[in-house]
Image (cartoon, rainbow, N blue to C red):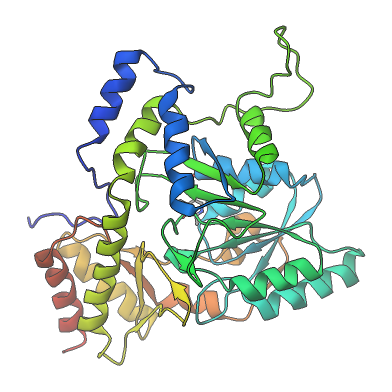
Length: 375
Ligand SMILES: *Cc1c(COP(=O)(O)O)cnc(C)c1O
């Protein structure tokens, strides 16, 4: 059996154990400790001034707290990008709010501004008020159309939650993703560009929101020393051990972005001359961390065949995220669709994109795809 090539595996730097050992030596084996603050500071330095970072135990928890801070209540409508991973939307259900799904635009594969505005106008007509928040995604690391989406959100006074789980290191007009939303999030799950094994963070625009998020993530204990509670709290804080892994990882974030972008360049150079293959191209002013490379092939049949051929060679692929409006879980939900995300799902294959891929690995992958198309 040939060496397994994974889709997007963890890539350790070797420094993680040093920080974990420090944590052990000082006995901060808890969801409090100096490495948590240190990790928050490093992320904050990376994305720049004006952002406040709250380290949490998952990206999903970060979205849940973002909805909490945006004051989303039971029955409120929340606009969600249909083309995403379920974790973008599950927290809306935790709040008993109502997700309304919107399709993608064909260039960025993210929330379509035109449909967004049509949807808002239609919701106002049908319910008498605009939805309360928008959850927009930087899919596979590609920024969404920041200018257009925020212009519309501002016009209708709707809060934006930026799901930047996949886009640490991406930029729109030179500004880092994760800084555009009223609330933004990153994930450090095992498959992301850097990992803490499992973890995430919330990015807020004010220190007040940061403090409130820490309060909510640590069981919402009122001040005083007698275990008084006036609000629902959660146990969502990142552990000091997990933060230690993050501290080791963040040293190499720049290299990880470079390497993932090189993976894209390799696939693009080798495969873009095949007329049956298309890529998620960067529009002008967009910079993707190229977390995951998804190619579109000519048909669903080719997609299935290629995935099978790669799998026979011990190479992992994944379909592109199945749109939320196609999910059994959301069969009663309202959605505004244009066919783009259905098409991306039908023809999309995610290829191995890890920062630990070598040239032999990449060569094995493109050779199989080229052979399939007789190139
Ligand atoms: C990974 C991911 C999340 C969730 O992050 P977790 O840390 O796994 O909870 C949310 N949204 C998107 C788009 C993701 O890819």
